[in-house]
Image 1 (cartoon, rainbow, N blue to C red):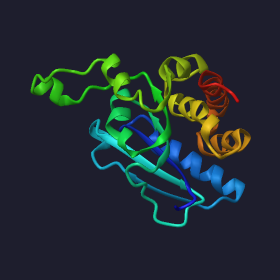
Image 2 (image 1 turned 90 degrees about the horizontal axis):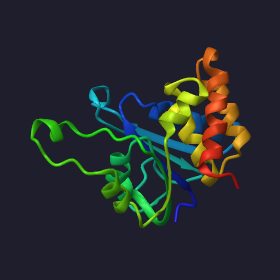
Image 3 (image 1 turned 90 degrees about the vertical axis):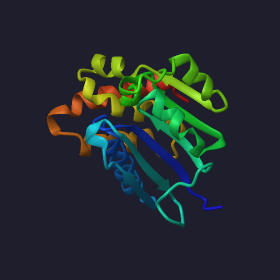
Image 4 (image 1 turned 30 degrees about the vertical axis):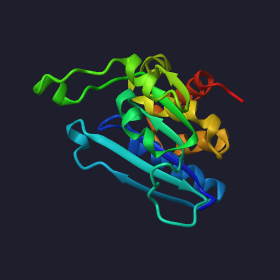
Length: 194
């Protein structure tokens, strides 16, 4: 047992997963928490998968082993299914309803999974499903969907919401602070406030 709280953030290149993980890391530093992180994003610029591992208060390495994540934050439905094996049995998933189909669906004419099939594959975990793209647009910019997702997931994080919000203010471009604050608050409301 590592004693860590493990968060896996996944998405497609360009969705803001790296900024989201940086926001979590900054929040840990503000609170004086020990944090380790790792990310993979080799082919991300070509629409590839991006994953960020965040381990809060852990003793060991930065990578989360399969079956050990407490929380999965997925910016895409298919990525949620692809990485769901990383979750503990009682793990939580916060998922954007957005769906980017892999190029093999088009180039090899493979059958595309439906939203219902993907959601059925996630039913063994507590699931928070939201339309982060729509919420981000309502907040003022579709680019803020990553902050919407953090707001929705904040219910299950061992970090104070006000610390996360301070981290958002520090790391997003200055001219977008107001939009991102609104995006975080709207995401938190959509994810259910405790």
